[in-house]
Image 1 (tube, rainbow, N blue to C red):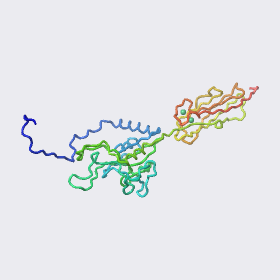
Image 2: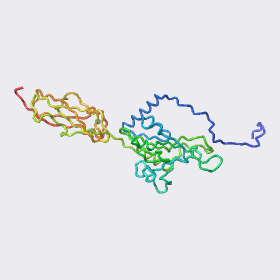
Image 3: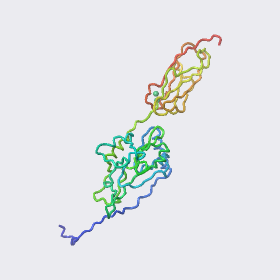
Length: 335
Ligand SMILES: [Ca+2]
Ligand SMILES: [Ca+2]
């Protein structure tokens, strides 16, 4: 007991308000150029074979990546964060890799394959107004317009309200961007939250959906050739002939190969300059050739062709990049 204090208060009144009372959020200090540089780096990461998962407000990065127009990226509020695992409202997408294992015994499913992805209250979002017990939509959702998304080649796996994609994948180069529009929104102090705020409040479906989105096997090219892919412009070569050697390089990987260097050698000595093929699509072929001057040469020669000799390209298999053929150069005493 503090005898030095004044008379204790007779009563204490504590009030809570749904109105945010803190200072206004300061505008971003980033310049448009910095934002564009950020977007270009992210896009480059994806195009080189990465998997970029964008959730909640980060879905806006689709615009910074120049992948989706900003006007097609929407935000709205729902009673709780949810995704309907469907593309058309009448069939489910549970068989899609991004919908895998969502539909489990005991996992609640609403109309149109709807599953809740996060709980609103632990992260501060109200589910009813202050003075009555009606439903109140405060939980943020970010989405891309379905018509535009699919026009751009995006795959729709989930919707939150009609035509608003909240789960999907868009291929860019060798990689993918995946969006989850309702998963881990920033907690808010805007509403009554006497028991504090959690950092996130993901449901079973939220965890499973994120787990699905994080699964990714990067694609790689694989350039290769065999001895039968090496061809000569002459069937009988006589010393002094200028022979064009053509190599067919095959990309047996699952990603395109760019700037494929090809080196030709005659029994260990490089023939001409290292050649280049601008691009070989996955499953495709490209050709490179060089002129071989056989002046002063005679007898059996081993012609070796090596794709990516300096190993500038990461591939599934680095040990299948060379092949050789032995050809005979006949003497010609009159030359
Ligand atoms: Ca290879
Ligand atoms: Ca390589």
